[in-house]
Length: 173
Image (tube, rainbow, N blue to C red; front, side):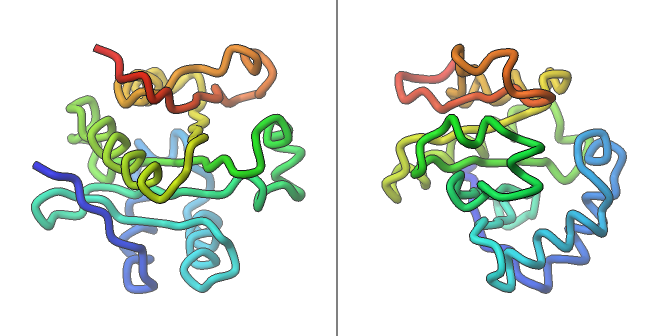
């Protein structure tokens, strides 16, 4: 099955709000109304982050976004993530969440991330990072399977994030 991506529209916001309120999202995301306000800003062009719904066979299975590092170097993000200044201006960050808890641990996140990175690389992006909470072991494993590796120079310097960069040399076994 091929993973497909479609841009988030205003019509998707109620579905996303319901997803964000789910317990497995709330472990890692903030207040759903705050998060939806961020996505609304993206959809309405006030934020350069590109939000997508991903799925397979026409079914909506999760959310993924790409954000430009240079565009996020302002407060409160610089205080929350000072490591933003350690990355190249042209770097992009990605975030991913799976809609249904029952789909966790089945390879969907890795498949979606591999396909999304391929799309970003085809667009010319070379430095692609992701910043999970290091306590989110399931996500870290999925990201490693998708070819992301911890950035050694930033280990222990990124607060509650494990900064990982896509390594074009391949994916983990």
